Image 1 (cartoon, rainbow, N blue to C red):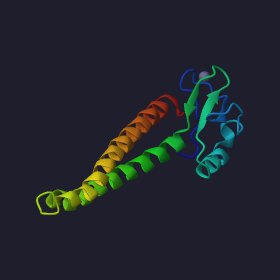
Image 2: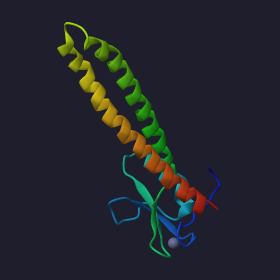
Image 3: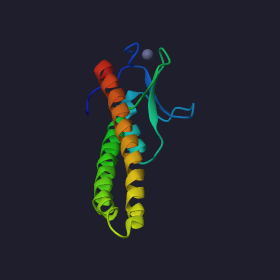
Image 4: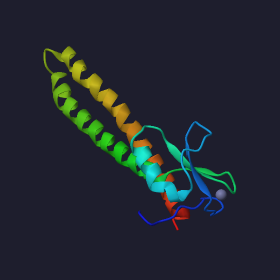
Length: 139
Ligand SMILES: [Zn+2]
């Protein structure tokens, strides 16, 4: 990714600044300060976006989106493993004399299922954004 320049997804302008989401103050300089901003972004949970000085367009930083995709995919797999492990124990318990105990395993499995769908859709959403930005924009 090094050496590639960002441009605005809307107007293709290159007068971009980095802005921390949820604030109106820029935290970095032009795209030349990109690597510094990346280091800053990996050290905090704050999301950053590029903001275009020409048209005001704002879009997420691809580096952060990539991290988000990776993180969400990992959590998706972990959720799936949790569902399988708890179900392997919980489901057979349903057919024993201690069927009530299966709740101890099936409840976490159900919660993991909810997380599974949440992380899966988050990964897809971030991937869509990433694809849109990189298709329109990396010069
Ligand atoms: Zn623009």
